[in-house]
Amino acid sequence: MSRPKVLPAIKSYGVLGSAERGVVSRERNVMRAVVRYIIYVFLSLMVSILASCSGRVSYQQPAAYKPRPVSDLSDTMETTRELDRHFVKWVGTPYRDGGMDKRGIDCSGFVQQTYHTLFGISLPRTTKNQAQSGNKIARSELKPTDLVFFKTGFFDKHVGIYKGNGQFMHVSTKRGVSLSHLGDVYWKDHFWQARRIIER
Image 1 (cartoon, rainbow, N blue to C red):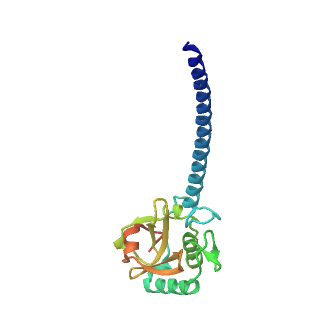
Image 2: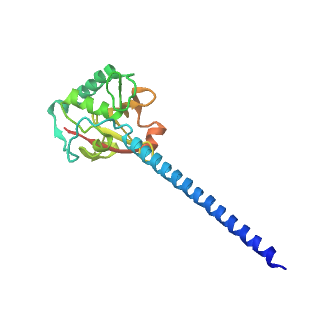
């Protein structure tokens, strides 16, 4: 007399198991979609981060670029005045990723533009490649025109041009083309390296 009671239970169990498998299958599909979305967002973020403060590449110089002597820059005071005059023309220009003119410019673009305008030197367009140009020097050896680099995030890099007396000109995302001091807490904590493009 117990069999009629057992069979419905077995049947119900079978239906429940099928429903559970359906739920699990849907959950797996949702998880796969979520994982794909996360990967997509991550890769997009990586591309954005790596491009940060590097702009769009207009042309590239070999990473093995070596500094060249420029006799005109033997006068440090005159060099500083040239940098000052150039800075006055650009101060306040807003930050724009990939920009290369007064409507907006980014940090590596400003460095590239400055070196091309003042010294006739073609530097790479990106911060990454600029950080491989010239010769690495100690912070204590900095002279006007040397490049200063900072790690502003896990992947983010920033570059500016040393002007003397602890100051460097660069492009701030908030203030645009401006002056900052290496002794400021933020820049002191995020300082990465200095490189000399022009040997005197």
